[in-house]
Length: 107
Length: 123
Image 1 (cartoon, chains in turn brown, orange):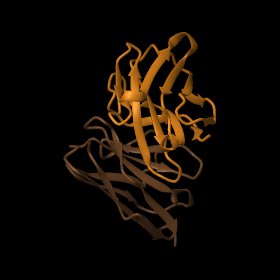
Image 2 (image 1 turned 180 degrees about the vertical axis):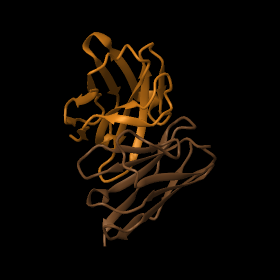
Image 3 (image 1 turned 90 degrees about the horizontal axis):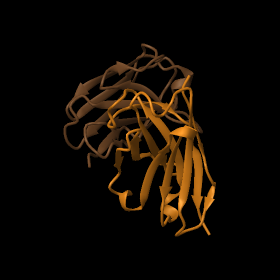
Image 4 (image 1 turned 60 degrees about the vertical axis):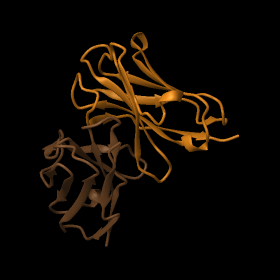
């Protein structure tokens, strides 16, 4: 199975700052990588799929890039609702797998 | 709009069978060709894909759970069901049902999720 490693585990930033989150795959997933945001007590919400396609209703401050084994989620200017946990997910191979998460916390 | 609602017992004894239902509203589960999916999240941990089912009956299961897992559809009731046998404390988790972003592809991202249901395995 493909292992997804997210870094850093925790990112401490202030509102308005830029956040850069990383996801590395144990083997190529081509462009088949998605990103989710999960707030406490809620289900994950899809932000980005297939590396760079924003899901319906997702604001432009979220962008994704990368290919193969290295991917990045960038939040250009953090809003209060962006302080949450972020997960990446690959869909290239069965079983589908998720990364361990990056927590974005208020500095 | 499409909504998913999980339900089931919050407490299951070890060695018993965990049975959950996902009720789908806003769309027929027998149309559109979606792979209806179960995902779980252990307390304080990350997400684990469990498996999925197409209205044709085709399924994909996580190999780590395959020997204990059955996912089925009841199209008349708009429900997707999960059965996991011989549960242990390691099966304690929040269980989500989810719908992928596009039809006909089981390996997908998921843009519609239920709110999740917490299941505790304990005697």
